[in-house]
Image (tube, rainbow, N blue to C red; front, side, top):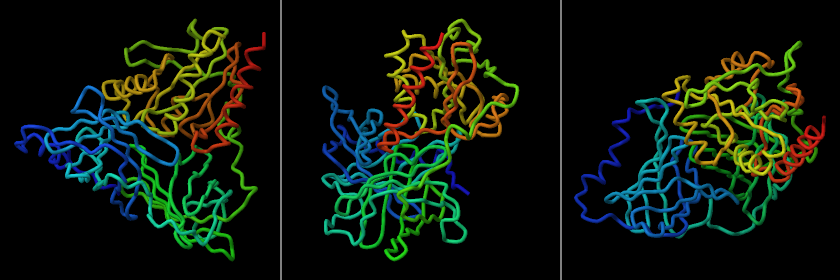
Length: 418
């Protein structure tokens, strides 16, 4: 069970800034930091790039670094002897005391109105390695595809519920795990001897993977820690032909249904329906998402600029947001923050909560809501033509490129229809 702390307990650190008595704020040394979260699985490392904001000595521009990803955090603020690095979209933040080239404090994420999850956090400027500063060659090269079984009871790959895709250079490894509901985003790490270490921090998700490599059996056996208290064992075998179930066959219309019958409110209270004139005779993409979901954000980061380039061609997008709270007063501002962050022009409505069973009831034309995100393609006649469960984000490399190509081909085909 996740340990939840009252808001009073986790605001003490930021309060030290106000009570520190310092007449001028501390200064954060700019550059790259090696950051670490103290989790039950051990240190979870990630990178931070911190630079002063031009013209404002109290704020800093911060990026979380995972592999090739530079994920922008919200503007960081220095108050007294502390820095606060927020990620408002995910209702999380890093708060730390500044001491020379070191930051020490906590990461915290809001779960309910009065409760937060927290983990100790520290970062040191000038360090850029992930798990080890040792650059000597590893004893194993894990480049390639791995058929993985998370939660394996036998210690063997009985069910392929994920596919690991890794690229190793020296002892440095990047890659991700593909699953039927999405991917684990940008993973970054090292191979140390016969052991694999991978991690990711994106403001919401905290992933730590550890595994031992058996050269004789070409297998990896280890553990996966997520968030504050999540844990699963996992095992994987090297398999260049490893594949997941077809993502276009997991979610489908129930017999007798031809389209989605939906009517939900935007944050301003306006009801939006696919029967509205805006969508008539248009190729329409329905995006099932949540502001709390990093995979959904990856998809939104693709769809928002795509829509700007193509909306004059007779296409529309409607976002169905399933949030942690069904109350508009709670979830409406989160939807608006998401729209602002990704500069979204298309409507996003509050469709319900992110419980998959409840989300499925909100969309009775579907067999089930299997994953966030799920993307539904509707033709000019208003009929559902294609449903894609999950999303392979840019951290998956060629799988993302393949999705984008297939997405554009399908849209072109539907636009060409009379």
